[in-house]
Amino acid sequence: MRRTPRGTARKLAARERHRSPDKMKDTAIRDALVERGTVLFNAPKKLFPFTREPRADALLNDLTGHPHAFVLACVMDRQIKAERAWLIPYRISEKVGGFSMRTLSTLSRTDVKRLMGKPDPLHRFVDIMAVHFHSAVQRIETVYDGNAAKMWSGEPSSAEVVYRFLEFDGIGPKIATMAANILARKFKIPLADYFSIDISADVHIRRVFARLGLCPEDASVEQVIYRARALNPEFPGMIDLPCWEIGRNWCKSRRPECAGCYMKDLCPSSAEKR
Ligand code: SF4
Image (tube, rainbow, N blue to C red):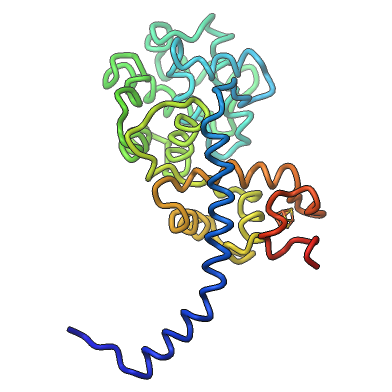
């Protein structure tokens, strides 16, 4: 067995002693976030406002009647604002008179390109997104018998759900994990585990992570994702919504309102402590 040299062991022990208070602080912060995350996770299901258009949101939230609308919106969510991307299924439904798989599966690639391109382009990259939209419809039709809900039915593992999204042309890891995250947290779809439900490390989440001392200010998206995995491996995404909520309500980019924030006693950046 390899032995640690005595001097190195002493240094490691000293470093560990030095790190211990931080670890305790991180654990306390993690526990507070997980506690709030659990409350939000167990809250009753509500209509999720993907866009500012109620009819588009109704379509996207209809996982029973139109589960493919959610999947196709994920496919469209690239290189434009999410709100605009998530409107695309509804805009197409207006043009073709509904959004049934029966109607969508009869559309050719050229039809989709025309629907997405005229009169106003629905996406910044109509040509490639029309190809991805058409290919996604064909995939749902052939692999899932026209029922996209089969992608998440029967309590699959979180990794399996992420993988199934990744099989669609145009969907990368960021959108695939976001999709699984929304299914689990917003739509309350039961999964066998939550190991692969990651945090969505947007600018607000990164700001809150940095102020809570969980990562440096200039941390990359990957650093934040792996930090969340290290903090709560069984369900890294559990701390996503609490951080988003803290960022929206109190931890604003210019003037954090620490007095009202429930993390103020634990947070190293709290103005209350200064
Ligand atoms: S205590 Fe202040 S700095 Fe810390 S997370 Fe809350 S609002 Fe942000």
